[in-house]
Length: 471
Image (tube, rainbow, N blue to C red; front, side, top):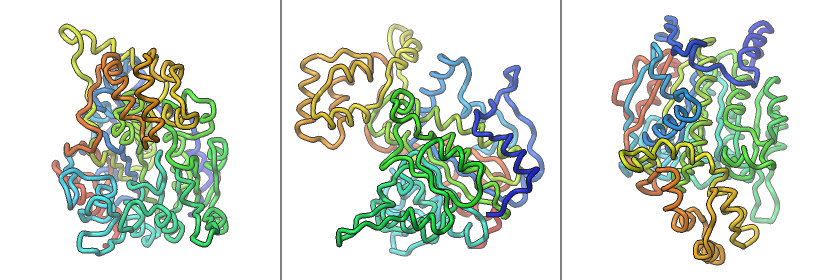
């Protein structure tokens, strides 16, 4: 990647600075709606920033919006965005080739290659043809490429922009493809897939290979902050599997050096901004989906709030670089999260938005703690939920621990779900994905061509056309 001229580099460092991004509101509380320049509304894009809150249903947006109004007296950035001049808003059909309810690999592949894919596959059409993903096209056009996620970087959504596989579960293969296809910035979890055990008992470690190719390798927040000021390709792996939930990072000392989505996003922009011919960057708030699968109210709230905090960062960049197409969306809903009416005339729904603040940890945190000790711990329940566990509840969870249940979220809901619902007023329709159509927002060159009702696989053609890439 080419370096910026010193004056331009200083301007962008001042803009981003790895500090908090400016609010979308002015000092007087009015929504910022500066008219886009002509380059921002028509013509060719140099860059694409594609922001994905994986598994974001409408109910999760409403929960977070009311929480923020109640607790911080301001609306979500997601809501403020709706008042921005030049915004293109569309309703997106998320179906896959094999089902009206998509999984993340099929949804990301639809964006990534322009074809609807069967659930579970990556950029391989139902007839078995492997389709070139968008980051490969971008690379061929001389652009830099990037993937940022709170999941494993080899997980379905980032892989949908960069990899080909019969199964999304082939994450070792996906890591190898990132190396071979030279994705310029890779930030997230999933370190275990870059150090692979071989059949002969040996270990294939890709990190030295990345370093030999000129990548900077970082493993914690401090190293990332320093590397963000540098140049060249960058790989940061901050967890063996997924990055811990934001609620756990905030309340567990051992996670304080694990960067969050905002920090990774800023670092990626600083590195990719140096690319002379532009870049394509996907940024995923991936664990919104995981909290939805687990019906974990506090976790999903804080995961989406973290994603929402990335919107001002993106908008700052777009304002300084109007040749950037910005897309903000989700791949599907998960769990059917809803803030419900509670109490007489629903008078308890507001106070519930305060009581959710007593939750300090995720179901995943409890699962890890209990499985390490093989013992139920009532004190951990008190710490996580602010709930005193009964002997009957403890016995129910202990039985699941003894049975080595893969995920304890289900039994935690069974044991404590009624109390959690009473405290939070939040209900769920399932632990699965949903078929709901979802919001898609866009700004910048190419956004004007997005129809009001868009199929997910149409976005590939819109992005490549905006970039002037022949496919």
